[in-house]
Length: 170
Image (cartoon, rainbow, N blue to C red; front, side, top):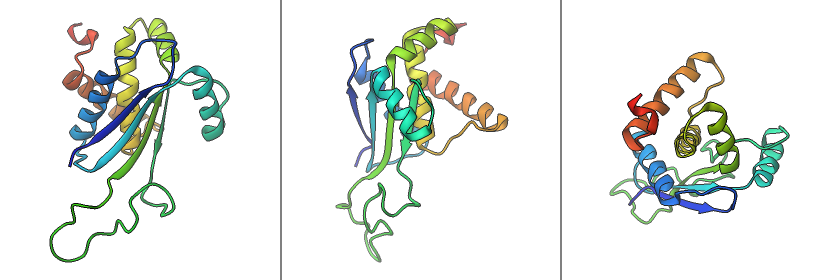
């Protein structure tokens, strides 16, 4: 079984190297210890779509750069495979459905604005958002300063290891 990442570019505002971003997502998941049978969706959407999602799920008006929608184990009505409590004694079952980790939704137009504002390349910004959103799926957070520092350091490590950002040589 593999770690599956399903990518879709549903916008026309900015180019997306979809296969590169899907591979980056998969690499981050594996580097973070996710093993076979896991699924993630990676979606690139326009400003209107991400603004609607941002307001609906976070109560915040306007577009944002990335949203993550983890499917939690704690809610039996959402996400994971039914009866995921194990297959009982004996050999593990290979026919169980995959674990649905969730969705990462990125807005390339906002990423382009961020890149211009922060004086970084668009591709580097897009990759950062993909890594950031993927880490959120896995429970990483940045609400507290200590958490933010740890998450930023891990993002940098993952980008250096799996993406080769243009700022790496600076």
